[in-house]
Length: 113
Image (cartoon, rainbow, N blue to C red; front, side):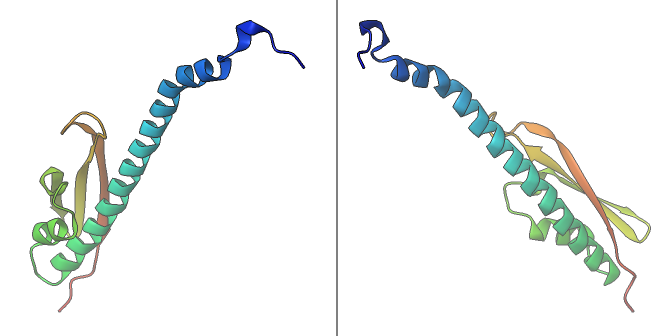
């Protein structure tokens, strides 16, 4: 089967044209992973803060203690009666220090005597 001369290198050109789309899809997938991890971490921080409050310790210190150093600065801990709400900024993958939004979780534990 003979190919016409004008089709040589067509696959290479199509691949190069598709590279920005592939990079964008990979970037969006990575951002989704980062947002999911932030959601997971804020739940763990809220549970730890509620545990600390139930035992009479500082819930904010407990919440910050379970978070990695990179996100500790963006955490807010609020006491609401016996429950604790933890709010965390979701970092943007590209953008250096920007925030995509916040995720929050609330946890409650009965006070321990």
